Figure 1 (tube, rainbow, N blue to C red):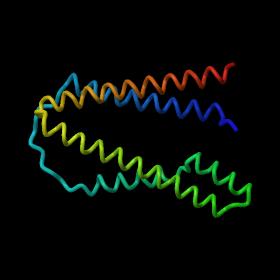
Figure 2 (figure 1 turned 45 degrees about the vertical axis):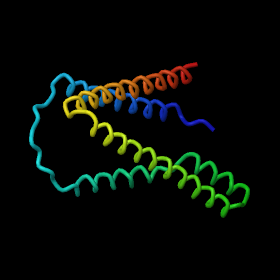
Figure 3 (figure 1 turned 120 degrees about the vertical axis):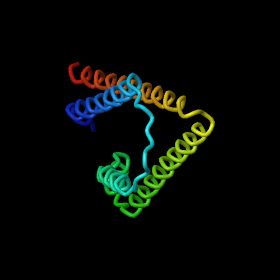
Figure 4 (figure 1 turned 90 degrees about the horizontal axis):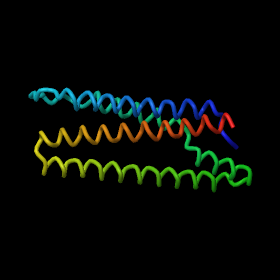
Length: 152
């Protein structure tokens, strides 16, 4: 079962635009570095609310693998097995994503403890530029592939 080409156009187009936005944001910050300021630490309540909103929004979209497993198990009249497999898939994804986030946070704090703040900003800007370029390139390649398969 294939998804409609318009879904691919929209998805890969948005991914490409996201990559371009990241690229422009970090490119502008790289060219026009902000003067160092003494920032006062504020409460992180707004950040937590936005993270919760993102988590709920992303969680509302069903994982295609879980949907496929559930449909297969329902067709085989094995609903309990489908629910068990869906829970295992969800726990596996949550564990993997959590471990990656923990590794990134620990890696960032490790790098920041070794590198001076001036160089850390330059490294952060370079990584932002490279990640924006990579997301844009892959999004554009997938978009071109989707366009090619729709036309031929």
